[in-house]
Length: 98
Image (cartoon, rainbow, N blue to C red):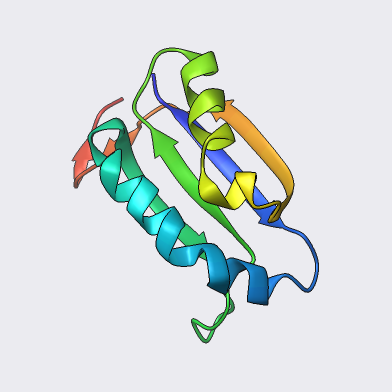
């Protein structure tokens, strides 16, 4: 069962997010074989970003924790909070799994 990693940015950190974004995206691209999904949480108009959700395809909590610990956003000090939780796929790719 995968792990969901939910992050929230520190207040007023859009400039830092923007500066680290390319490095963060490269990290995700380099590790895409480990991901089921990843994306930013944005305002309703699609602007900015204030956190994100990454679904890491692993059965090992420590692997998910290590993954986010090595993310350039984490290393750059962007996050005010990080939550790692077990995630059950109930619906995935248009298919009901439970």
